[in-house]
Image (cartoon, rainbow, N blue to C red; front, side, top):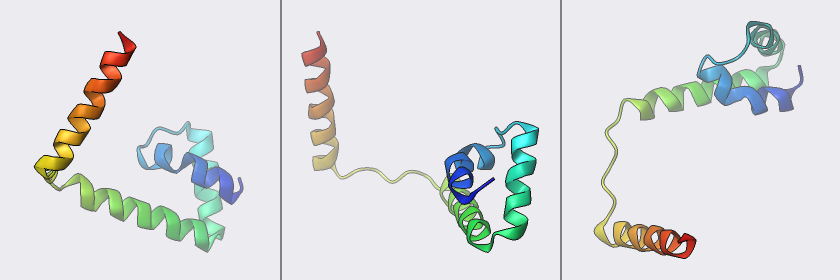
Length: 78
């Protein structure tokens, strides 16, 4: 496995969704690649921090813009 493959599979790895053989290959790569180990560690910590947080409400003007954009897209698809 090379670094690009680690990055491509990062989300699946963190979610525990890799096939066992691919997971083992990725973990072997991490044993020898400090850069990828740092990327995986940082991503894991970021996910842990944000998953435990309540979402912040959007400012009303931003919510209105999103609602209008979505309504416009729905209207155009009809």
